[in-house]
Length: 471
Image 1 (cartoon, rainbow, N blue to C red):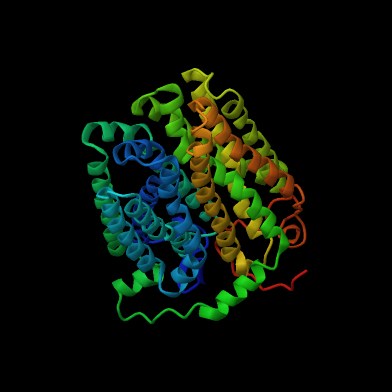
Image 2: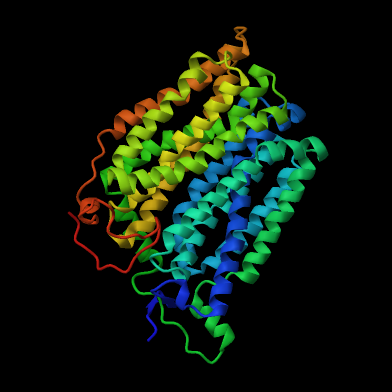
């Protein structure tokens, strides 16, 4: 007898992939490959300024503040879009949402490749961020219908690993490509790949197995509508529930500086720092910068494992991870120009390894609320951390290029020392505020006797659980 369950209008085998028929297995594997390819490109767009930023600044004569503004626009757009992206994926369809918005990002990427002014580059980065911001949320919506509860965490973790492949490609490989053919040709090719990702997403991705069955057998009855409120009622309920919880702000304050600082430094200003202070070439800097996403590739799953299996809680990993990440700013601030390439490599490896602890914020936010609002909670925290990335990329640039400092004859070492003190102080203050965060209430009720979350749901996915009353 087949063990099957119907969830959200799709037929899903509750015993995993072994019971699925061959067409379903093949299609969901192909869907994962297409989404992973799209997510690699999304992450590449996010991290590319660390290598291409100094090249653009040199060609167009951008000031540090202009470079920071250009790079930060991606994060402002991402922050503005990520919260409603889940609602759009639910209402309009995740496949359509991803394909159309990624195509918009491709057109903006082409405009970026031919941009000749700060305004054009900044506007292009903004639209790129808007376009790719839906990819992760839409992917989780699709995974929730194609994978069983015992598979969701595995495949969402694999997707994040592919994201770091995009970050890796934006370091030494990007530097080598720019040296070979120039940054404009490189980003024209990236725009073409982005458009290709949009097209294959439209062609290959199917929102649910039930939709695939209807394509194979058009006479099949239509799937029932998703239960629960929709449209404006769902949006109002999610906003009221999420933003009335004080602890979501404590989490938001932490990730604003935790994620924001390492995206400000690791995804933009680390490149100019290595060029200006140490005189490294683009290729030499790229090899050192590769160690940052490599560290994150290890740090992110390690932090999740420590939270689930060792501490059985979220707060210790976020707090101690933040403190360990804070340590990495000591050499950046106090020994700015005194490190050799080996120490710089070790520093950026540690920077990514300790920075990976931020990912626990998604589980922490989800467990504060009724499962119906898990997606909105994750979206709210994601919005805050993307704002942090935009803020620190811009503010660090303002400090580096501030006329009062430059006019005073400050050397590059002093300028970058002052600039890196900004994220150091910001993270320290946010850790002090976050220390008031307490797990309990909803979070405690959702844990089993071993201290682990009772549900293995992926952040952003909504399990079918009866609503509870607010504590």
